[in-house]
Amino acid sequence: MNATKKRPAAPAAKKRASAAAARGPAAAAKAPPAVSAPKGRLLTPAAKTRPLAPGDLDAVVAIDAVLTGRTRRAYFERRLNAALRQPKLHLQFAAEAGGKLAGYTLGRVLEGEFGRTRPGLRLEVISVARGAQGRGIGWALHATLEEAARKRGLAELRTSTPWRDSAMLSFLAATGYALSGALVLDSVLKDNLLLTRPESFSSPSRDKTGDPNDWSAPQANDYEQLSRDIADVHLLTAKDLDDVVRIDHHVTGRDRRAFVQHALDEALRETGVRISLAARIDGVMAGYVMARADLGDFGRTEPVAVIDTLGVAPEYAHRGVGHALMQQLFLNLDALRIERVETVVAVQALPLLGFFLDTGFAPAQRLAFVKRLA
Picture 1 (spheres, helix red, strand yellow):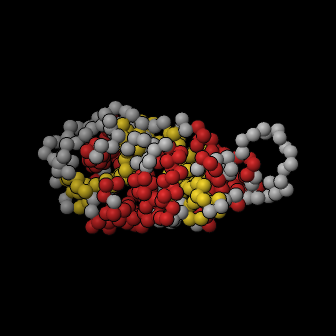
Picture 2: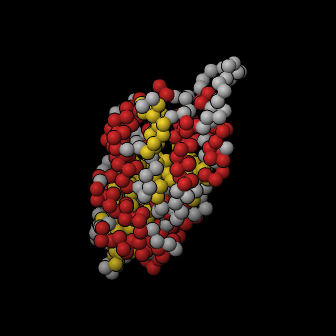
Picture 3: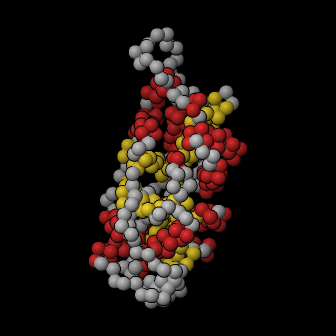
């Protein structure tokens, strides 16, 4: 966006925070209003923001490589291609000065992950070239992103960042973010009991309701069957759309076909590796997990699998379907040499939170943030 007015000088705290825009973020809560830049705002002499274009890929990759010490071309190429396929689900902007790219930001629309009802934007990356930092470019990029999100009627911005990244924490605080009512959870696969001691999760009876003191007539293989043997677990495919919509409707009470369609498309097309799974019992889908394995968002420089959505049909609850899905997911990720899996869960979603803790997750070294827009 172009500008005509000169931005007032930022306070010292805000100036210190501007360098944080060279990193990537993750999820967010309410805070003081941020600086908003009108359309076309002047950043620095001869600098302006505009939509990110496919032709910017080489410059984006070059800036990122300097900042992170490695190339993440495949990640940025996928994100740019995804925005071309589904422009309504992506907001991506560039800042240029002197005819050269000086910074960029990537955002992805959130429609309903884990039952969320408020439409929002996931701030995935905001970066400024090393030589252009300290000139308000990160602020202007964020203001442009925020303005575009408001115009689309999005209610909030969400992101996450390591709790020790003081520069990014300062940037997020200064631009109006606060801690969200969500926990970032993760599991290091080499330590997860579903892989190291699969027999500890082996009995389907452990998920059944009933008298915990009733030990009568146990089946001979109760403690020999692996969790993933409870259901037939395979990769999720486009043909599973109707089944996923059915389960999601049962779980949430709402018809969210559009969200499910977009989430499935992302799981099957936009990620680097296909890892989303469906579980079937007697040929009927009993549950699913949608996950992505990528290298790049929220400032990550190592491959991490992220679970976005998990659902189990009510009629198959307490039968070990969720554990079967997670165990097979972990096995697949381990084979791909992805060492860590992550998710975000609202603190009030106690059953879901309990499930993840039970399958080896724990609070991650990242904090979730949100900025309310409405």
